[in-house]
Image (tube, rainbow, N blue to C red; front, side):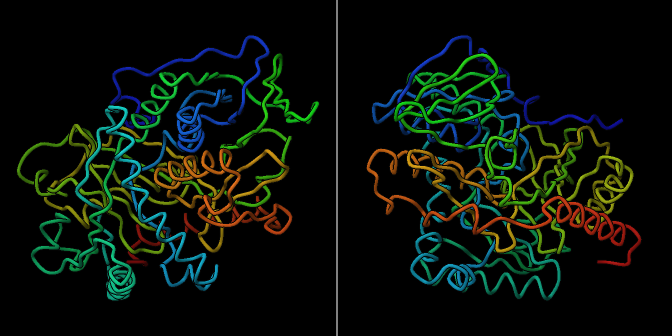
Length: 427
């Protein structure tokens, strides 16, 4: 029987708990949301001498930061040249460069604070599943290597060895990348923030942000935080009606399923260098291992109400890529969601002086969130927009029409795609 439970917290020995806000406080900066972005912001601000409080509606890592695949990837989903088309060459190259360094920032942060993130640092694989996918691998290699990225195209037997399957004949190895247990990483960030004097409050949902005497009053049900500046770091897990950020994104669900721990010769051949991976399918399949040897498969889509379909998809992908394993016993399944934009580019906002926000990481939350937290801290400290990875935009200019319908249409289309795979209509 597959448990409807996120695996990542099971692999962490100590899950920290923080109090609910129980009195009014005053700090230099109030951060809303205790995920990668919020905690990275708080850490970098605290290191600059600022007093910081974090308000989290549920608990640390309860949103996307504790639910994602755990791939520490560089860049965006869009190819670098595509970014230049969308953003202009100067802005596109800047974002590509900054996000290219983001995995290093994650791993440096892990080292600096002694976080047991269960990480690997051996690179990740973008696997071409057909001729069109292989062509995409070649294009990405050309564009990234032209910019000095440490990437390599694997073919033939070397590709088979790295991927652990003869089904994939070409893959892009990005040596900058790696994996983490995302929950271990985010709770490690929380512990580091506490050590630096940051106040973290869980079960403290924000109900409003209002201006009071040249400061911001961040309100919860019973108490409030008064601060000079506010960082909204809730992204796809923003709750309440007190701001309009959610109008700029629509939600994409991501499904993951994990086997029981695997041992033996057949299991040892799967991703033997401990890489994370994903393929080039329209509805991609992510593949990785955890510290106990489980095989984790993931894909876009929400399994609630369709569990049979998604487990059939998992069985199909496992047999396609790793038939030597035989029939697997699946142990955990869960979903998370991320904020999505059509151009796969994040957005940052300054809705009022002293308030900043970021959305739409498009599935690259670990690296983008960590980087964005540092960038926000630098900007709030120096008031220099050049510290930011891309220019501010407005909520009005990015408001999406029919957001909920887009999400429903996307989820329905993805479910049909997976059904087509299971029926062998789509390869």
